[in-house]
Image 1 (cartoon, rainbow, N blue to C red):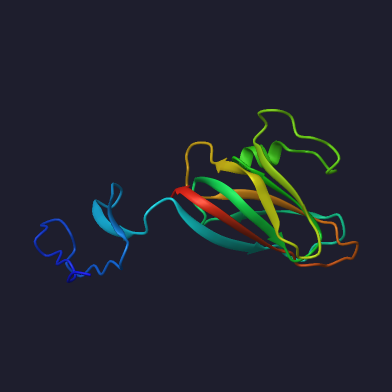
Image 2 (image 1 turned 90 degrees about the vertical axis):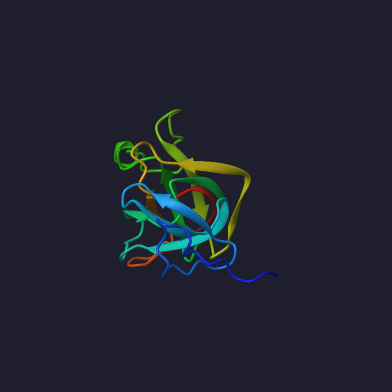
Length: 166
């Protein structure tokens, strides 16, 4: 391995930046700054927890650090629940289904549905792509329904994905 690259010779790169091995310099058009970023695609894991949910109660939650587009690899929940993923907040709001027995309509913005049981990971095969309708801000919109059969459960959902776009 060679010696570290000195960034001082680049006139528009902050010389205090300390990229780690394997990172790339990406130009941020909003801030007009170069940033050190991990290359894409990359595997990411993120989780979110609902508030207390009674049996069959539903909560809308968002994951904000999984990117605007990617591929679902695995979904895990620590309680029995019905999890839905959407292309937008509007698609989530428009989904009025109250039972997992009802199928979504084609083109309604439902990306993936998972019935999670007993803290067992659900491996998404074949993989399913996720994306956001414009404007893409890196938010993955979800809805979680408690199916545990008991009241007041907090439910943690973990998503493993291959991020394709930040």
